Length: 271
Ligand SMILES: C[S@@+](CC[C@H](N)C(=O)[O-])C[C@H]1O[C@@H](n2cnc3c(N)ncnc32)[C@H](O)[C@@H]1O
Image (tube, rainbow, N blue to C red):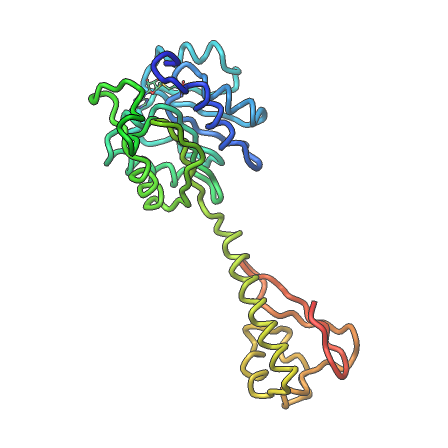
């Protein structure tokens, strides 16, 4: 393999580099071959459990000799249902280009389905370069069916990934697909909502705009509700003792965030 692919070693390094992020405990490798990629990636995540699939029992027998005993190796095709996961990382080097375009696009959806929220897909592979002169790896056009970088980025995005190119060297590339962590995404939106709410509400307070305050302070955004049960005038929605707190934001639950406001007599400060 190394003889056929001029930057083979560099590709393996770049795949491992792209896969070296965060806490990764469960890895799926697509096309383990003789175990080179698995070894490099496991060096980055030594405590992770790796499941490797490959259609060739012979290749996996060679991988078995060099990989730790805990690594699970299964004879399976990329076109078969993938091991169920969830995985933190799905990684593949020099294998997916054996599928045609439609199968690659379909595989990317299945990869997204076996990844945990916030999971990552690292794909190092042969591509069709924009400049024909960069096509330096011999391909047969039958077993090897590389696609362009743009096509693969589009298929990754269609499968729900935030897709980027981590490395590109002539006809080799490392693509990274990140899945949004729904929980983190929700928290981010909640933070933005609260920031906007607090700044609108501070402006309304400063201009003594009671109707703007009344519109901003409602049971969906401030609790306990009402902040000062005795007062009907929003301008009096001040809790008359320093340090009393009320929370602004969405009620507790998934994707909610509490922003505490200290109400103080005669003025207020937000924290
Ligand atoms: C070039 S090796 C790559 C191995 C290793 N990742 C590396 O970079 O050295 C490609 C592997 O993909 C496997 N392969 C090719 N098509 C496959 C498919 N459709 N399903 C599963 N494995 C496949 C081959 O058996 C081979 O072991």
